[in-house]
View 1 (cartoon, one colour):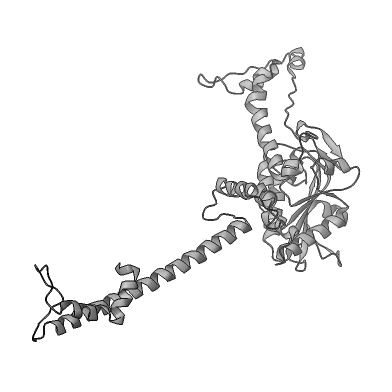
View 2 (view 1 turned 180 degrees about the horizontal axis):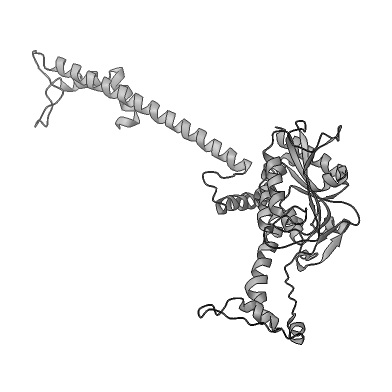
Length: 396
């Protein structure tokens, strides 16, 4: 096997842009390398004749994502598509990588699109790069006429309760395709289209061009119609992967970093907020983002606009000010109440002393005060502390 053949069939890693040395093992690669995984030919779940299946390819991607020497991953995609079995699982591995993952698409059709749409970035390989064939189909070959000609007759016997066993297939063999289409092809197709729409998000304009009908697009059209993001050769794909890795590790709140943080359009409404200033955010955008988080089962967190945050801060400050005022008034009230009680006790003490005309603070059952009582009361009322109480709204 030549080095080129080895590189095409086995995972390898490349050093930084300045040193594009190829390493056959993630352990041998220096820190900050880019892992390269190749999808070549029809996609099948199991390995076949030396070609790795999606199960093996997925394991390689997960190993790269977990390896300390790897900072990003590039998938070289050259596939016409493949089987339904294993494709969704392969897509889930790609979409769930913690490190940036870039797809370099020479041919990315059918199942290849389902898998690759979970990446951070799709780069079309050039003007002849093909992307599309999004859809689901089944092909059935009927050999019954040939067999009968040679005296071979096939019999199908079902168990008593297995009346629907392979019935859709049997109907299709008779030229009746509705049951197979309704029970199998349509549900699978909806899952396929749903993933493409979820992860390509607003990049698709189905009114401009419905890319979900099975057509294949080439070159610039793959970008114009939202199936790819950029165009460039393989070295460019490696550079972009390293840039995304640097952005992910950069504390600067750049747009590229936000796109990486929000991750592969998992949260389209949240990702739409990336890079926008407070003035650009609308209440509708924030509401949509919060509804998206709630639908995903994320609790205890909510997004608010800058104006809402400022209003909340002002409300908190006003509440603190009112709380401080209430405490001050409460303390003042307690002090004044104590002083009042002390002065009343003092007045009671002096008023009950013997004299020519004894007085008291309180005279029960007497309509007319004793002579001299008015003067005594007036003197008490004129005391500074009693006048302070008279002016306090708490005692009026």
